[in-house]
Amino acid sequence: METKQKGLSAWHLTMMALGSVIGGSFFLGSSVAIHAAGPSILLSYILSGILVYLILYALSEMTVADPTVGSFSNFAARELGQGFGFVVGWLYWTGTVLSMSSEATAITILLRKWFPHLSIAFFGSILIIGVTLINLMGADKFGKIVSGLSGIKILAIIFFILTGIVLIAGLFPGTRAIGVGELARESIMPGGIKGIAGSMLLVIFAYAGFEIIGLAASEARNPRETIPKAIRYTVFSLVGLYIFYAAVLLPLIPTAQLNETVSPMVASLSRWGIGWASSAINLVLISASLSAMLAAIFGLGRMIRSLTDEGHAPQLLKDKKDVPYRGILFSGLAMLLGLGFGLLFPRVYLVLISTSGFTLIFTYAVIMASHIRFRKREGCPPEGICQVKGFPYTSYIALISLVVVLLSMPLIPGQGTGLVAGLIMVVLYSAIYFVTRFRTSAENKREARKRPQRHPELVTEFSEELTLDQDKNKEK
Image 1: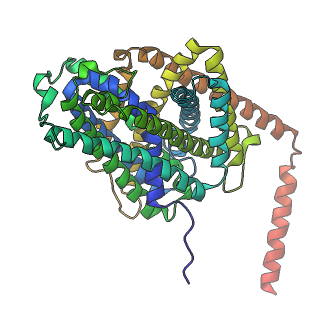
Image 2: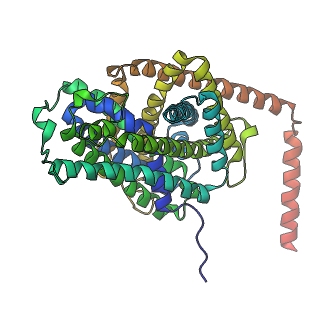
Image 3: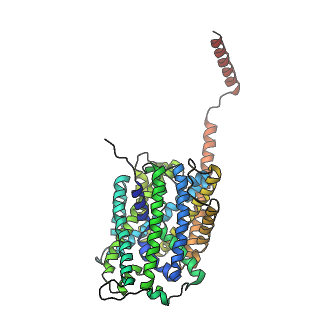
């Protein structure tokens, strides 16, 4: 009788990635991107999809060759130096903790539609504690829960696409076809190049979260086959869903009417008499944020394990068990502190939240830089399996594009401070790395001085006597 293979399947990894990517920010944040770019948002989704394709396949090549726990943090340390591994690991961890503590606040605010007196401090804390405890169950059980929650929001997007097609084609009884609708009256590029550049940043944020596949690689079944398959499913699912979503939305509502206070799905369907969509999408938003939080803590626990293994985090957090309990609990506690900090100092917290976008784009740029060094050193890894086509040109194009996206942050209101705060955070973590490295080096030298030194002449005499004895034994 065959034993069932343990570990995460390609399906689990794909649903985990989709759970991490399609969060509440997609359902609300896409309004700002579509408003900025108009119909040219389709171009932004396609270009960002190509960029995501290159980043994911670069990550896949390195992960298949070495399915390590820390993924991109370990790759950066190996290819670019230990300092890069330290900085990108802690930067990613910090940005994700901040953004997920804000998701707990967002869920509570959404629930206030039905429970107006719900306390953000109390219920937000309960949510964070809940998703942390669920992560302690292990990868297999956790993967099933995230798959279920991810399925809800994917079905919601598919439902919107199908409903939009029915409205556009006029298939509802007693209605006439919308056809191209608002597209006939829209400027293709209302914000010009600046609008596309600004929307690109927000669209890449909408794709962000796929890197969870790399962090989960060490717990996958047969990573050499599972990781490329999961990445292929993730890329085509995301790009396909996003492009169809935007293509159906554009005829239904003028892009000038969209803003960050309402989901584009709700606004467009309500405009055509489907008002009950508001409550339904509200529930989907809650499940979207929950699955994003679950997937985030999963990744953060593995990142902490990697940092401790590399000596880049306090050894108190080191955990040798299959589930990194200490890393998960530490990350959950950090989210609770983030939630409390946000309630006490909301203005400072908003500035810090804007750095989460910076940390993600910075991480992707480091992945591409690591991949370039990796391919130059290793060639086609492993066993000739090359997934990134057109190397090195495509990898350099992706890296340069990510740098341009980072520099475009000031084009979006509120993101300029995120760029500045993010750069300050990079400098801060770099300083921490060099200080700790200097202290470790000084301690090692002091320990070396304390150790008793052998007299070199005695060591030489002993080794000569040992050699003579061995020669005599051979003669006998």
